[in-house]
Image (tube, rainbow, N blue to C red):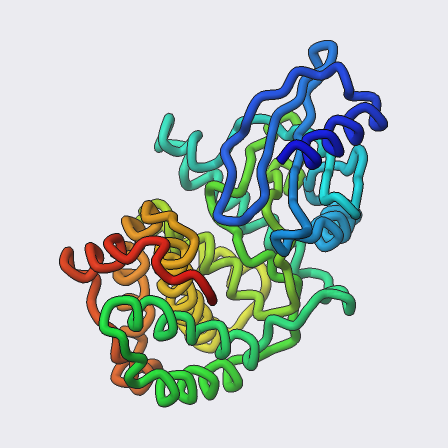
Length: 335
């Protein structure tokens, strides 16, 4: 909108970047928009996060500063305008893990293990007391999106929702432990490889404004069970085993927790991807649902999750059901 563009231009000018050239960068599933700005050959990233659309840059700033203090590589904050939702960030480059892996699959294992090592570094410290809770109660609640949006979008019912969530909540309670900071969107399209840095600082961190205090298995399973790209199950197991070996976790207990956290996450994502089509008019996310469904079935195959598996009454993502979600794209105006 014109007024917002005026405010954005004023922000860049006040930051000393008024004469920068601007080019769009790929966005994400949120209302945030990104541009690469370049001044005298030096790049930076502009985040445009409209408060009137529910965006708030303050959590991003706080988490970025926390990660940097731990020796991890989050973008440095160069300038900020909280009222308008503008950030000028250090540009960490274009070395997305997903892109590098596609270009050279031989890098995949090394990159994934480096990402696990960054999590180990992060989890060596307790979660900050100022981040929101992402423990069993919250996780159970948001898993209900699988019924509220995915199932209901296909069948118009939420059959089995309450029973399944009770069983999920019990498992999450049983596997709970001291919380760590979970970034909640830790996967190959949100990580950048920075080979000129050392150790865990080589893993650049992006998209962490929704971070909270939760289970250490959560981000690990976000990485190992990527909703957007296939990860070899053997490599996923190696990542989990590497984490267990380096942190001294009890293997049986951690594998149960990992399966439980992953099941919760994949239930939530089924709902989120359906909602992105039904409400936000983004049908491309429907194409990702079959992978998420397959990952959920893998999680539910853990023997201790048998009761949850039996309770998860959800429609399979058949071509007909997926087409239903596409056909209803942007037809649900209110959440």
